[in-house]
Amino acid sequence: VQLQASGGGLVQAGDSLRLSCADSGRTLSTYVMGWFRQAPGKEREFVAAISRSGGTTLYADSVKGRFTISRDNAEKTVFLQMNSLEPEDTAVYYCAADKGWSIGSEAGRFDYWGQGTLVTVSS
Image (cartoon, rainbow, N blue to C red; front, side, top):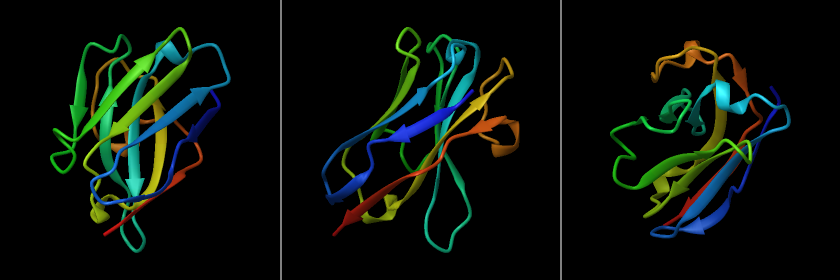
């Protein structure tokens, strides 16, 4: 699995961004996928996760109702649609793949990590 995250940038509060995470391999559909973020001076935190089929999703309370995780297994890509962005959402966002079957928020359950993409939200 080789994950490549993209789509970050500089936006204003209230704007939207869509992050993408592409897998250069052929097995994205066999992983639970997740997004995490790490703000300057803070620890990495869970953002969202999606089951292998896409039928189950999980969100951090801080992004619930604003962010949507989705996946296109045929295109080997996972998305994070981020709406109503706030300055507190500023962070490097990472996608990750979990070989397990169940969905969860713990970073330790994820086996593969992509490089991050920076999201900066100005007030």
